[in-house]
Length: 460
Image (tube, rainbow, N blue to C red; front, top):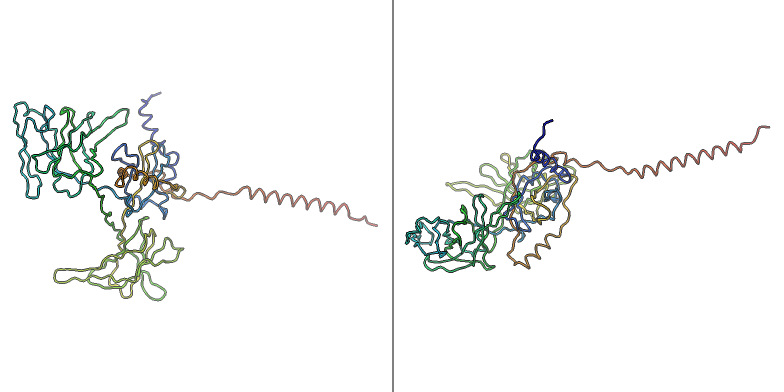
């Protein structure tokens, strides 16, 4: 009999075990990539694939699970809520500089730079002033932050994973490239692996106020243990603006109404949080519209917007069109209907706008974590996560945010079978009670019949 190595057996058994337990209740999963390992709490922006898979009008079948498949505390936040806003991140240009053998940021070389009128660096050159500096590795970084107008809360650096890394850096700031001041005692970059686990620290954090300077310089305390940096990003104070609107464009079906008018009906392909609506028609037009929605054919239509006028006028090389209509509330209905007050020139395209929501979850249990969605028999439980995160913001500062996580490539779980509602449980106790009562009634009737026969008078 052929024997397989244990790693082969484990590789085959792992996918089978991943489908067991709570995962069987969901149609699809999205593994999560964490921006850092020590975040504690994380935020992940939902994409259109999650909305298409979700079945619940309240997104109750969207949840986060750990490696074992157990649900972790999670809540869905609207994009307008401050907690759901990600800190603003901006990639910064940077230049490699040779490190100093003595640990000083400037000893052994001088900095020659060309600066634009707005302060941006065009070119940086480090000229050696000592014989031994020409052979030094270029592991120091000169970071150009001149275009930023907000204080920097932290620097985040990226590098290609490779050898073990544990490097301390001195951080300095300058507004003229001549006078430098220390802004942090040291920043440490870590990338270690052991037993299949990876510990990564890629952030250099400043104080709660942030650092605002035109240029920053990072110098490794030990040039031989420095990281080979590929990307430098700045996390800015003040947070990001509201998430931009995303649009679903739907082609409808012309439907004759009982009163002789014409309506256009549309089907939305997911539980998107619709907030705005617009109508697109070719050519010049001006029509008054009413927009209605319902979740299924058994429900009645509910007014969502209108009457409002949508128009488009072109001429002399320019064009003008009406703005989108804001709905009074967020709507997740599947079916939509447009009605106009006049003849419609063509087939109107219904444009529905939404801003993606954010799931915030607590890193409980064992990683890796995954977002799961699509179920007719499972629902996300209530969680006090909002109160917990608010408490953390009070203790760590009002600008604190959960660490970021991103959705990876989706994978199938139970598929379409998870969308089939479970059969209602039969109440066998009721049937048993009725059976006992019927049997008892038959027994009583039998006794009564036998008594009647025994008491029947004898014939004369």
